[in-house]
Length: 92
Image (cartoon, helix red, strand yellow):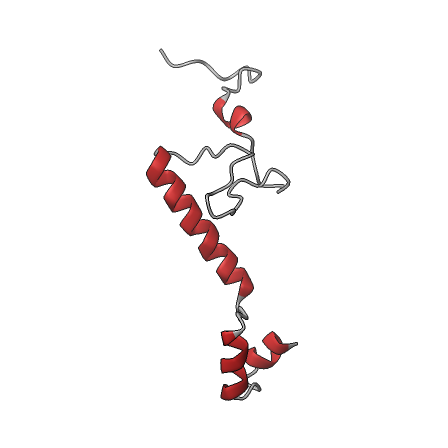
């Protein structure tokens, strides 16, 4: 409710300040996106790729891989060539 009120401009500035001091995130999806991008950038800087193992967790506890996501792919599937495809030919 507070986020809707804030977005609509109906939260007084003093109340918004108190809520922010308590750690409210006005735009939680944007915050999650930024945290994920930050973690992915750090992982890439360390490993020079983004083939993150499903069980990987960053030092701060952030789980970069999410194998329960419908868009997630396991590294074993991503690293394996599609040998079942009749059109796939290994490069020489």
